[in-house]
Length: 272
Ligand code: MF3
Ligand code: CO
Ligand code: CO
Image (tube, rainbow, N blue to C red; front, side, top):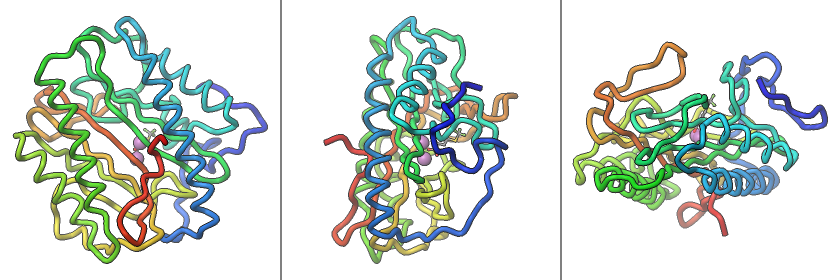
């Protein structure tokens, strides 16, 4: 595991790998929101910088090291590091990997798609975002998958409205994916975020009447649809983390952390 300088504030799981779930208000105070704005902005900047290093021949380990060094240089802790034992500072998910890919010595090759998921912890709060990048020349079906997945996130964000149930978000995403004959991953969901990486708000990216929690002004959560070319179901590698599509079709993902406002959503991980 890469080291983090002693002066940097760590989340509770950093030493043990065990996350102690605590009670945390779903609606954030203005003071917490201000801290989250700064963490989220940092995560977005680092995602952009690491994404700019994506190229054929670059290994996902090299991207992890770049991400780790940028986060630490900003006085922050890379949230994935030792979260439930995750061994790296960045999640890198290539082609048929849905999410939680572990950086390794494989070089990216022309035609790959790769998702980079960056989460940082600073001033006691997390900011979480991801994007899928094209490696060199990607075929038309892959470019379409990535474009529609980005649109799915946009549709989900547009569905955020106080007073409405969270199920509105998954309905909007699923409708758009289905219109393009693409699959929606069900096992992994968006989540509440703040002082803890994952809180008890759950945001399915498909429609389910069980997502009946009502959105309230001041809530912070992520939307992070994973969209597949084929079967939406996953299986896991023996590493216990890497989730891949059962048919090995490609999967893309985009993620933002957002705040519910009186009129809709404020995207905290958007770059100005
Ligand atoms: N950033 C991921 C998310 O969007 C979570 C990664 S957990 C890790 O929720 F342990 F794999 F890092
Ligand atoms: Co997330
Ligand atoms: Co994430």
